[in-house]
Length: 447
Length: 180
Image 1 (cartoon, chains in turn yellow, purple):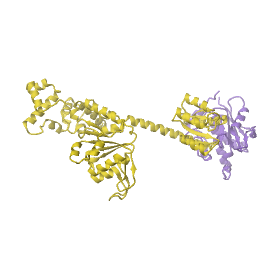
Image 2 (cartoon, rainbow over the protein chains, first blue to last red; image 1 turned 180 degrees about the vertical axis):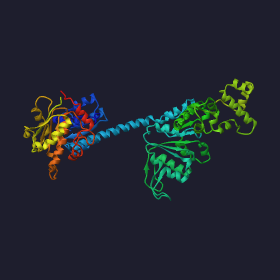
Image 3 (cartoon, one colour; image 1 turned 60 degrees about the horizontal axis):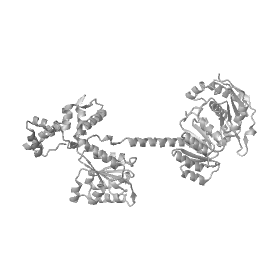
Image 4 (cartoon, rainbow over the protein chains, first blue to last red; image 1 turned 90 degrees about the vertical axis):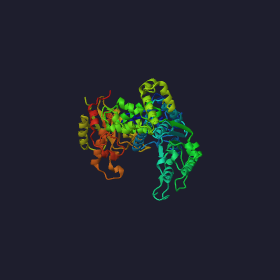
């Protein structure tokens, strides 16, 4: 019994209204009846109706016109025409205007029963689809990007600004700063969010493979091409194409890619069929593309096509205030995944983590926390649980010179004391002027 | 007080052919069931344009001839029934009311060009009588596959279900109090 679906019967013949009302009541539907269009519209305004059975020939406003009025009031209502005056023209017109189906009186009871049942199922699917879309819209917000430092807040602002547009975005930043996460955040907040985001790691593929990955190939186009295969460009239709490590694309593929970006059409490798696509491009690189251009390894025209809106993701060392938040996020994430009751880093471990420079950025931090979660014991991660090279690297000079060791030590003390010059000078057992001189000498700057 | 059930036999079936129906309906509805002769005017409900009999018109006759009180009356006829919007019906009932009508016409294999099977017709009739009476006891169509209250729009569907209501429909019948 379906007590939640409601059916409104609109027919000028009382006997039809009564018999259908009875028929649907026995099926457990909520049923209403109206003898003309005016009455039907009144009922529509009083409460929503899921399915509306509509007679075409009625005195006054006929069913076809009423259908349009109903659509204005409730575009989601399922309309089924039921009439004794069947004609192909009216049927076609009704369906063109979005009617669910069209039946003629008298109706076979089995057919009517299935028709209503199908309408109910279709409504349930539409409702489910809308719900899932809402979930998709809510799911991948900016929440996955952690941080409240001014540097990352600026990135959030840029993401929100560019997401609503269809502009090509170039994300730049060191390896491990979360460029793909930012690409996904842009996609998830864009109008294309219900379509796929297709990622291609351009740096991971040799020349021919990348071409085939991007454009797909026809059967027999090269040795091993046993089947026709869709390329990533086709898969990204209506969605977003994320080209990671775009600076690594070879010159020939750069030219092909440029052509696709300009014409939005291409052919599969070994094929002649022209395929039209509609996608947005987001690309990311940690390379100096300007230098690559001057060296002739990156096409200038492609550079200007891709570098329309640029987002620079700061390295982790330039947003150290985000490290505790990120560390806490990863501890909780791996705590859940490993079912381990470790809730935090000890103050000493947190100190080590904050002081470290993180050349591998957020990715390195995540790996370090994951490892620490494996070896660590509740209730908190201790410095010993962190990868050994952390403390070693942090304290070891980059070169063997005395000046390098002094520079690192000064950085370390300054960072430990949050760049409090007086306190740092006291610990270093030098006066404040000397410390200022050394800061100047080594070109140190407060992050 | 449980309502009595009167079966108004307007078919060629003898009362003793309905003995099983009487027993089954009595058990299911916890009611006293008796067979009475019908005084329905089938001609009045006949529609020559469709060569069928309007079941709603028959239902009105059953109601008009009903005594005061909660007694449920189901007329059994052998004519082809219809309601104006549908091509045919096996029967019709007042939801949570006192009157129902059911026909053997499309329960008989001969309607479908097959050899007659009187026993099968009575078994189908038994289910349809219980089904329509179920509506007069306020039951809606049930989605349980074997429940007698499952909607049947073709005769094979009647064969697939049992004569008994499912536990939920049985509970509703047991808790039934006639609407005033």
